[in-house]
Length: 363
Ligand SMILES: Cc1cc2nc3c(=O)[nH]c(=O)nc-3n(C[C@H](O)[C@H](O)[C@H](O)COP(=O)(O)O)c2cc1C
Image 1 (spheres, rainbow, N blue to C red):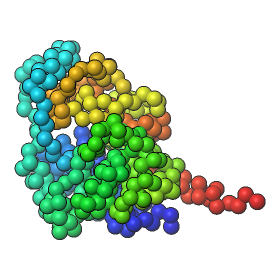
Image 2 (tube, protein in one colour; image 1 turned 180 degrees about the horizontal axis):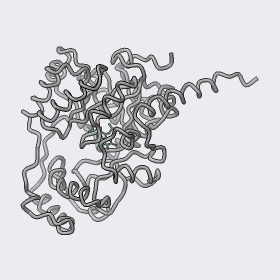
Image 3 (cartoon, protein in one colour; image 1 turned 90 degrees about the horizontal axis):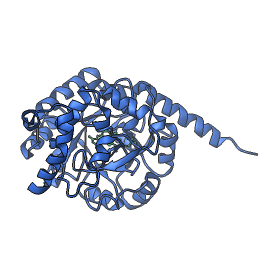
Image 4 (cartoon, rainbow, N blue to C red; image 1 turned 30 degrees about the vertical axis):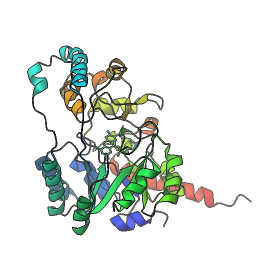
């Protein structure tokens, strides 16, 4: 069948559809398990979780499915933010803090900043809990960590935004690589070159990558249904990874205002911006992005992410979507409120229909 690919056989899943690990509460255990139970690969976005929170979520997923699933982590990175950039941005953020009634006490409340030890603890939990697949973004895990996971028979998946980054993933021993096109919602996985030069459309990225590497390739960015799935398989990908499509689905943990923003937005309303976290990410343009634009020398990730955390949290509580991070890809017009199972099964049905049409002789 068309849906049997090297990736479905390596992951022992039925359909070549991966639900993106999305940190920040979108990927509930119910969502992850529903996707896996429907024949795809569900992924827990654990980038912002503490080791304890991640372990609890893994146990919850295991109660809901016996199928394979993935956990997605952020490769830790150094953040050389200058004191001056931190002071500049804190001054600018005061406006939002005042409007949202955030006291400086609250703002400074210590939030979870992952240390190397937390990250290593998470890797150990994945191994101890026999998690079948671990995916990474924001860089490539060290060769030692990759071999530690592989020795424990965890399948290791990387993220790349250019052919060169895909090569680095392959050389570092990763089993497969997610190619993130410029259409993609959420943070850019770019780690090697300038992020603007690494904004490559998915239709350019996939065929050039499959010609350059020998590991299986997964296409991500703007894929919402069977049309996107079939087109990516035709370009040489062995699976797709979908994020935005699952943000608005029934099992998603996304804030209803985030879901509403995606469901009512158009293809020209997203921008790639570093103003929420210090790392470029694609989301729906709103007042926060407009007001913060033009600020010179922003702190990097994760410093800025921590500095804006209380604002994003309070904006969500106080129903102010204009100050929330509304991550979305460019295909938001195709978003629906279906269940995760329906998204997968309708996509498969749509591919079957398209293949039937293509195979009918015209004369
Ligand atoms: C709300 C949201 C959160 C995301 N969080 C993560 C994450 O934690 N880790 C990750 O590897 N990718 C993350 N991504 C990016 C996805 O992996 C993927 O590249 C993207 O969703 C594909 O484009 P699409 O949103 O148009 O489907 C996120 C995407 C969205 C929309």
